[in-house]
Length: 100
Length: 507
Image 1 (tube, chains in turn green, brown):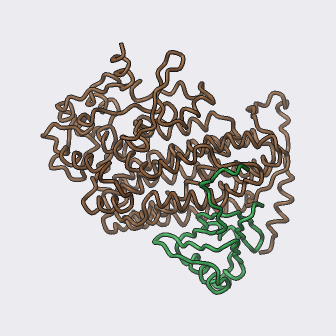
Image 2 (image 1 turned 45 degrees about the vertical axis):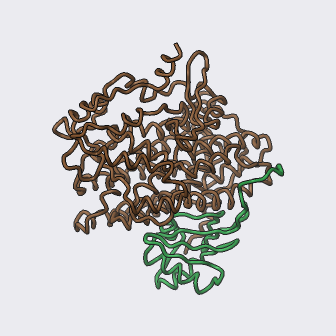
């Protein structure tokens, strides 16, 4: 990497944009309760959740909040976008800053 | 969940076979200049059963909204937004279809099974997006007060001069190395730029009273999230082999500029000039979504592999200062050759522009004052003609030669093999020089219409209403009477290729 001045400033925030609605509200409620470092912003059509370094979405906690079963493929239906690196596992979707 | 996704995925990804009905040597696989390792990782771990269940759920939710909107007419949406959507949806559905075709190529060329599976799902996604956009077009055509323009939107994607920008970009990634397509389309266009439009402007759609478009945008973007992962997975696979580094750098250098001109400039024009409920400017959106989130949050991390800042990024940043406004001069200045009604900006918006882009009035104010005076069809004054005619178009990106600003253009003409070519910028000239054959055959507006009366051009394009003489495009939302072909002919404007004109002066 050259030492030339760069226009790019390193940024270590990750985030998701969720389609507004009941499920997004449940996700936001879980995050608000369990992750004090997360910032939740409501827009007219979507909810933005951002956090430094790492965001974790626990599907069992979201299911409990919703009061019904909830799985990864259904969560991906409302996940309109993200920034950071995504990892999809059985009961958890994680967004991190590092390259994986 | 009864079944473990991760375990099932491990089993499924090992299922692969070579067809027996054709010898390996007979199977056509496009050559690629990249080195492809066999091992890859798909961070989304999507497989077919979950994929279809997920997409079915997305479709059910979206089409329920479309059904509701068809049954209950809600409040009248914002006319500026609805007219702008004629141009936006026309181009979008063509871009999505083209992207779908590319994924089939990638699935053939890129060997690792996990990546191929992701590409094949993306083929289906892109077809779904094309259909979503076509259904939105159809809904708007049936419900909007002026359907003219929506009815010919798909035809217009193939013949309007502004669509040349998107067509040339799609043709570029249809014909370049398939692996370059993955980086250019998935790792750049879909990851860096698509959020501005599909997420950022979905809120503008809601506020403009167009929930169908808001839902279309967000459901499309939920697939894009997987496409970003496809691009990322391909890129990380390629980075395993050091011989790929300079090749990847070259692709980044090209597409950072190509994607900016071919896609981001159009998005900026839309965000600044077709959204009445303005909050963030297009420049602010690009800085936040692209420079901070994409370049800062992702691209910068590739430095450890030896990837450096894209060569033309400083020019991109300079261009962002004025790109939307220069693009607006073109779109509004050439209004008769498009197919929607225009809503010129008002005093309040001028103040907003001056606040968000200090110095704006000095550079663009005069145009808008002139534009407003030339909307009456009886005056026989055409802004296109009074401004000195249409500009020359860049041989690579097909944007006019007026960027970043008409008074400070980076455009140039270059004689190559006896042919005079125009480039909007040093970056597009550099792209051309990397692979001249790739760009030399693109037929521009002037190759088709040089020497024609503008009225005949509009007739040839088919941009007239059912009576065969009233223009689809109108310079204001509610003209005192609609412009016709006769009004346009009375303005006596002949299309003249600026390059031919310059050559004639020299001789």
